[in-house]
Image (cartoon, rainbow, N blue to C red; front, side):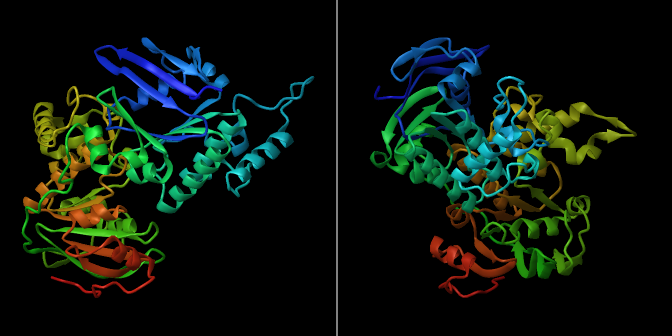
Length: 507
């Protein structure tokens, strides 16, 4: 057996006007979990498509088990046992789990070609059980969570005797607990001899699973290292081409007048008795385990799902927000957790996405002044350093980091002074994170009051002036960011021990 199960040598792929891969290389050992990292636009997606036979390379060679192969079609990769699990699961939501697993390679009776449903259900159940899943294979795919759908996709790969599984950002949409379950599945697959290419932006994924990491930057191969042979800082330099010595910017704002005060806010079944204040120029972190009620609290303040009891004061005056339109009119903006489903119309251009909340500013007697609209969109896109060919490019064509900047630009187009940012750096690379952090700090310096919802404790500590910790729908601690540790936040989130800082509200 060859030392490497899969080897890419000097692979180049060019599209009109763009060199997507420039003489890249990659080596994957049998039974190895190998991380692939790089900023958005580094060439990772094209790399996947070359390996899975979607795109044939213009130059270079691919070796499988030491022998040169040509992958001209996805079927060629499939025959070799190469499968891909994508961040956004591609499935048939109206069909059963069994049908999704066996789509394209159904079990058929030899003579009659009748589909052997009983055997397929039994086989599907076997694969699901092997991966630790307990749901019925007859379950409709669309009723499953993202984590469960990923398990089905992995089951499909195993049912086709996959030897290499490519996992593309598999933890981006998962909770911490679901991510840990996925880690265990990946380790079980590795122990059975399956090789895994784990593409991720998250350093915790890499440290938790991989034995080696390869970095691409600007469509080029930068290097491959054993995990214990490269430091965190050196890995960032390899990915972004510069030192991100100060990932979190220096504080620029000073706390001003009170913008928002909530007293005893509650919504049946989600959260209860929540009280806090937000001041002009302040970044207020909001964290806690998934299911603690963070997003539900923010959606209630924004009027998506109004609260049942309690009071809300804006600039000292009691207000009742009934819907998002009223929230925007009151100066409150909301950046949702899922930018693709809730924050953008992907088919629309950058300009139309940015100006959507404020079209009334450019309309006169039913006529839209497109010139003024486009001017505002361009100014905001330039201000946030959005990378795109033009403001007419579709939002779907942008990287995750640039999509997030478009959602922020949309907030800036309206007359707001309170911004609720729900997981603003979710699924973006370290370079884009640094840029988004700088934008958030600039907004605070301009006088915005910001509620920053995040599951990443270093982000909450590094960005916030104060930190609200929620547990089981209630505030378990309000902490100053100075001197706070990840352990203190986790203890407050889990309720295991009393935190060193007392529970308090500071004006």
